[in-house]
Image (tube, rainbow over all chains, first blue to last red; front, side):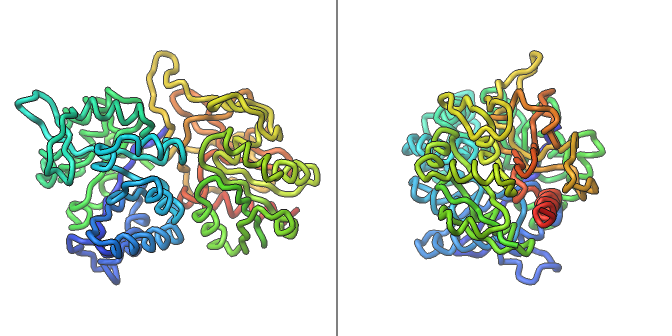
Length: 253
Length: 210
């Protein structure tokens, strides 16, 4: 039986992990490779690196991070942030990442999804969607540029379009819930999960182990759940979340 | 031990190269037959579409090289698309003949089984269940799950060649197949944590014994 995945996310800027991490056991808490190792040992099923570097040098540094991570870890990882062209994808994947995720760049030029899927296969292409509920539209709408600009796409329609173009997975972030620690957006996750046939990763809002259960259990049935700060700030650990899920009868590794 | 990772332009070779190096192997990533000749075993990786991969193997004449290697009983491990290429035929994009070392046809997951709808790709950690472990594989595995990521899988296989499988919505997904010196792994052992490392280690032990 396929297990549900728990995925810690690391924001990396100019080659360093941001959002001050509080681990006594780690020599250098700003080192993405050290942190990746820590999460691997904790039982993380995958990792996501989000490169938020503003500079060209920062993105070059990210390639080194990818290479070192691939040389160290024996679990899969995805890299997102600043990927605009097929060449960007090639550089990241050849450095050893398993998947790339695209967000704003895919909304600006959707052919990027198709180009990536044709070259590397759909399984390498993750489309990240930032969505916020709109009273006006009575549905969740897609935002670009880290949530600054509203598009004309609803999350459901864009997810379907992304899959039609070749996305192998959807990383779905609820902007309403992000940072709130009050749980994942179950309505959004369920709606998108039912609209597409590829795996859906729920993101935004994790505060406790129960939240992972809610979003991964039968009713909503997300394939994976991603979180950043609750793992970084040690409010809970990947191991604790998995133990809780196991007790509740959810298949985990 | 010297492993020749066959570089025919398909996908991410870095991770598998690193995994073998961590296990103490000397690794050569190449398409050069002379360099491959002096290795102890061959590894056929692959990510991408079957017809492209098959065409590249033909263009580089590595298909003939692999057929010779098989007839000389040289150890060969195919991973993911590299495993699928070892079968008779694939339906991916357009029906294409493979190398034919294993009986069977590569087909796409339909997305439904017995009225149940399931996700395609088959992506994530699934339990690997042993069927006919070969001599090189001791079954003292340190973990249960391996990492799969694929939309196509081997069907109509010779049951005696099935080493291990995963269950995906009632479908028996061949995970490891073996016949003589040739082995295929559908999942990515280099990305499968402890069990993946263990399986690569066991395979290398088998190579050593050859």
